[in-house]
Image 1 (tube, rainbow, N blue to C red):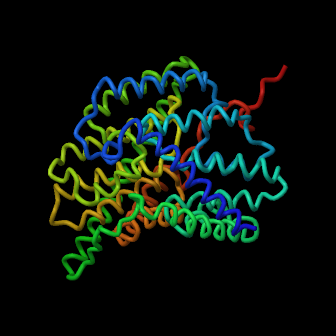
Image 2: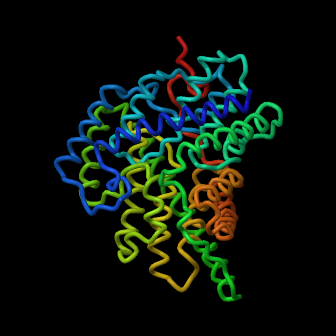
Image 3: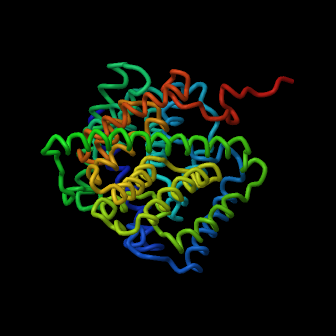
Length: 408
């Protein structure tokens, strides 16, 4: 059953992603989402992003229960459904889909896993939680990674029967189905050449890149954590429900000047690794910095989604810029892999998940640098978090067990 569940989950995720992506392309165009055009008409970007912001404000109403939970929160809800906070699923899923269509730099994985979770709950009604984990693992097929689903659902503890086996089988099935459906999409890196070190000097360069990239990625991950924490402390949506409108207008202005700042980024991967904008180091570094800032702002002001693809793209943007500054040191893919690994270790705090995710996102390119980047980031993370790899918990939300109702 885990095999069938994972396959159905992968197919369902592919259909939903294709539907949302198709609507988004009607608004923006394929070349815009790939970041291959220089600018978007200002009136159009302001109208679309501002209009979506108004709808988000009306749908979410500044209520935490109407906000889409991120992937770790969804997994926690599955592990302990009795203590899961109250959520308004329809509103949160609708808002997240609109954020994807509106060009926000947030990823689709949080939306897809929530859709799959809600569907599996409706089908199994809590009778078979292992199949819910298999469904989540199957939805991870959007990364074209056979084992990522199993690693993600098993990230907190080894439980062979209830998580690892159904998660891995479901992930394999979802990967097969999703990979077949998206075979002609922009997610394949078949055109990107593998560059292997052939001399001692090149080997030394690869190690140096891994160390430097791990440091840079860790700094970016720590920066995003601090940025989000600063926004969370201000509880923006609780004080003013119209924050999504302001964020949308700011996003519209940025899309006019730098289209690559927006969108999840799955269609921006190949142009970046093919060397698009390689002659403009300031542009690449600006894209990375602005995408990081907008990712944090969007997540904390109602434009909810995931961090996987936008985190990968901003890492590749910094990697591309640093490779152009230091062309004699390593390859573009080694810079991107090392920064990606360092970034996600600081954000997710799970080295095994990050290693598998980095290899899958880069499809094997720069693996040695990615491994070194993970090691560097783990050491930094332990120093920052006092020996604990896990990032600080998110603030308590309405209805969560950490936030009990006031006593009468």
